[in-house]
Image 1 (cartoon, rainbow, N blue to C red):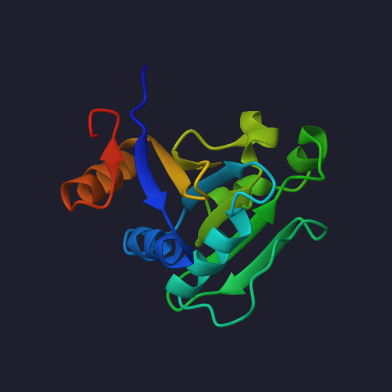
Image 2 (cartoon, rainbow, N blue to C red):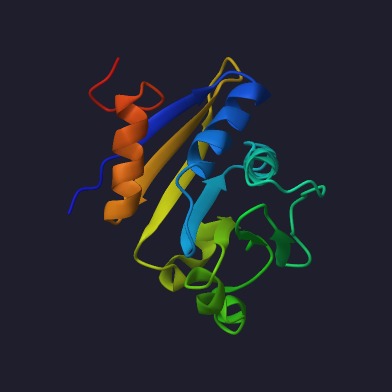
Length: 165
């Protein structure tokens, strides 16, 4: 099955925050977003804007050494994970399923390192950096709820797909 990928260009931090705000309107218990990109691509910056959009006033930083940080959002808990310094075997022992299928929203930085442990339904976000410092967020929906989100955001002019110029 070929998955559609949608694009969101970010020319500055305000654009990155806008994507977090857009996505926050669709959240429900058990939402899983995965986030990958090179060091310095903007994963933590996106996570911070996304958390603010969820109503979290605490400072959100990368949970590189703590692996998982839990925050109480305005409507849903937010589980922020960073898999950069952990093996797939170690991650398997963390009970991630409790987060993935729980009452909150899970965002996983460096998710490609635990690919086999990820739930089948999720929104995969990969950040690339262009020569002009523009970041492009590539959103690949896995499962109908996430596909519906991306289609709605495209129809509203926020996302582009491979057929758009």
